Structure formats: C-alpha cells, structure tokens
Image 1 (cartoon, helix red, strand yellow):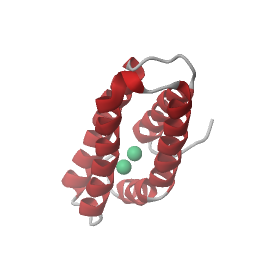
Image 2 (spheres, protein in one colour; image 1 turned 90 degrees about the horizontal axis):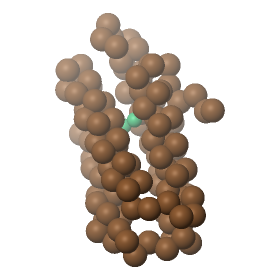
Image 3 (cartoon, protein in one colour; image 1 turned 90 degrees about the vertical axis):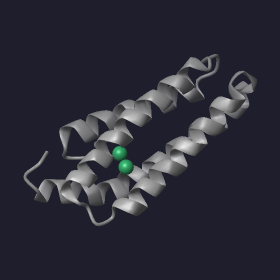
Amino acid sequence: MRKTSDIIWQDAQHQVLFEILDLIGNTGSDSQVLFKLKDYTENHFALEELYMAQLDFPGRDAHIESHNRFREEIDQLLGQGEQLDDQFREIIGTYLTEWLTRHVFGIDKELEDFILQSDTR
Ligand SMILES: [Fe+2]
Ligand SMILES: [Fe+2]
C-alpha cells in the first residue's frame, strides 16, 4: 500500500479512493462503482475543502478548482453509465488513477503540510 499522507483521515480516504478506482478497471464491474466513486469523492473533497476554509489555506481556490475538474470527469462518466465497455473502463480507471496520484502527491501534500503546521487535524 502506498502511503499518501501523514494525516490519518486524509491518508485513509486516499487509500479507499485508489481502491475504488482499481475496481473501475476490473472487467465486469457495473456502473454502481461509479456512484460509489462519486459519493466517496464528494465526501473526501468536502472534508478537505472544510479544512481549507477553516484554516484559511492560501492555495484554496486552485485546490477547489482542481477538485471541481475531477467532479466534472465523474459526472461525465456517470452520464455515459451503462455504455462503458470493459476496454473503456480500463482506460478510465487508469486515467483517473493517474489524475488522483498527481493530485494526492502534489496539491494535497501542500495542504497536508499546512494542516500539520496548524493545530487542527
Ligand atoms: Fe485535494
Ligand atoms: Fe485528497
């Protein structure tokens, strides 16, 4: 398992997100997994955004914008729902995993450092 953060809730949630994305790439997974991804992503993003608001995090706007792009990607996929074939699913799974990896090890790290320096965890 890759460790993504020193903050327990953030790390645990990132792990779950990566696990869900792995499921998307699996052959035979149904569109329920996309709803699961949407739900879980929304919870996670909302929590990070709450921290950013409470701590008045300077990189907040760019970070929220980045979250919004991922939200849009998921909504677009949900719109195509049933038509996703196995090959497309695999491509999507890989694409979203790469996106999330960049986000988690980039912009989320900056937020993590900021939270760690504050007293709020
Ligand atoms: Fe984030
Ligand atoms: Fe995150």
